[in-house]
Length: 200
Image 1: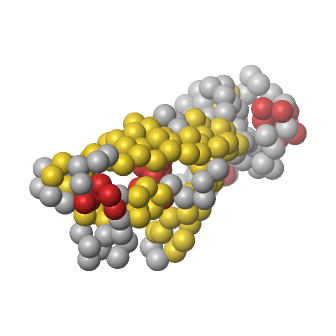
Image 2 (image 1 turned 180 degrees about the vertical axis):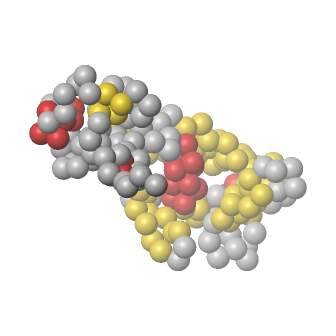
């Protein structure tokens, strides 16, 4: 198990040899907004990376990375394992003055990985690639019922007292929710429904 995905590019920069790195990762430490964050994987994530020289200070990275990330179900907040199969491919440019690796956009619109240390740590690159490839939201099951908006009960485990208090036939056709229910899609004007106002 590797602590970080390192690839040594010293000999590649001096000759036309390719560079290769592979291993497994259970987490990645990366920098974001001057903070060190950790991206943890559900199981060891295999990676395989090859870097080929293109001439001058330019190179090309290609390979694969297969992390499994844990996300929360958008409705009931249960943990959901999300396996990803990432195909890696990016231009690289060696700039000795670069203190840390970073991605910049080239004139063609393509991203370029700029680095200054020939012993390149790809943690930041792999973390950003993983986060960009992860879905914005997931469900643990297509028919997930979510949580009760009143007590937080997981409705996948069965109804709660708030649901049982409202007969099924008492449905508001306009809103599509039980009259008097405190569940999702309740409007801020629901409390005015039974208000007795004086006639003008």
